Amino acid sequence: MENTVSQAEKLKQLTEKELNKPKFTVKEFKRQWILVVISALYVIYGIIFYYLPLLGWIMAFQNFKYHEGFTGSKFVGFDKFKFLFSDGTFLQVIRNTFAMGVLNLFFGTVVAIAFAILLNEVRNRHFKKAIQTISYLPHFLSWIIVVSIVHDALTSTGIINELLLKFGIVDKAYPFLAKPGWFWPIVTLSNLWKETGWNAIIYLAAITAIDPCLYESASIDGAGRFQKMRYITLPSLRPTIMILLIMNLGNVLNAGFELQYLLGNGLVQNVSKTIDIYVLDWAINARNLDYSLGTAAGIFKTAVSLTLIVIANLIAKHKGDERLF
Image (cartoon, rainbow, N blue to C red; front, side, top):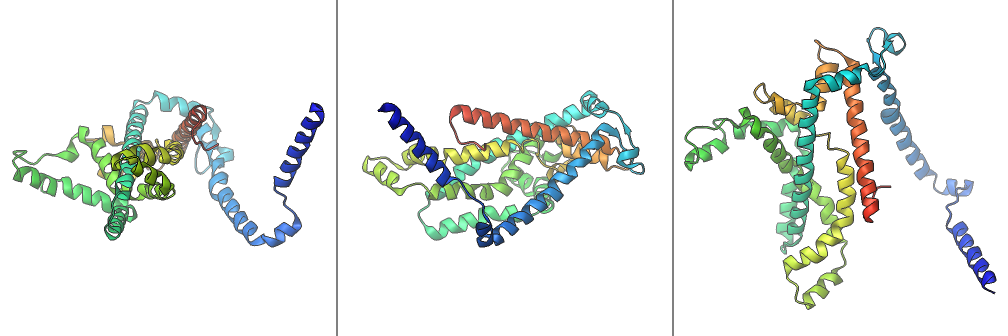
């Protein structure tokens, strides 16, 4: 009897799987052909602009010469990678990139979450919308404009030094842009000013999806605003935070190019150079023009980014949190 019941259950499960299994038929294609065509265009776009260029990675294993091309350039194996990791400048560049990337990731995530939660607590609808609009407008400014604003604010005659002198905090103008110790904080604060409002949008969207009954129940139990934020809002945001954190970990080595390149100078170059600037110097600079070395540095950055994403995803899977795959 038990065998008969178990077989019946298995048959039922198989039937449900077959029913739930997506079927792509000619009839289904005719009904949704517009969606199929649009999807195909995106797939073709991805193949052309994201996957075909990966063929250029072969340059990292050659002593590539432009006039000789891929077929004529000499194959040198891992010589370019060996040079990279024996080059003190590249190791310094890795340190700079990783440090600025981690600072941007940590403070960018924390400040965006805090901003979204606090903005959600604003009761005045019009004031809330005005603050949200003002906060994400800097995202649409180019880094050229942002660097100009930061540079003008931090020069000896800028508003920061004017205020410090006016309140007697310093006796003479402080050279912020000439001090290596200030470069990473300036980059982090610039990124926060530009991206916090934009990054907070997705957290605000996640907050609106939280069941209002949870807050009502908490109010009945006597919970205050901060208790609701701590015990309802933050735990409800955890899946969103985990997904974005895993995705952003892959961008740790994309610490930036424009900001560091434009704001950097000879006095702070030991802390301002990133991998992207290193690639520019070796691959594009007319003095070096070493495409192979620049490509090898780019491959290293990609490999590290993929490794970080996979490790973070495995940790999230082990902890039972939301994950990418």
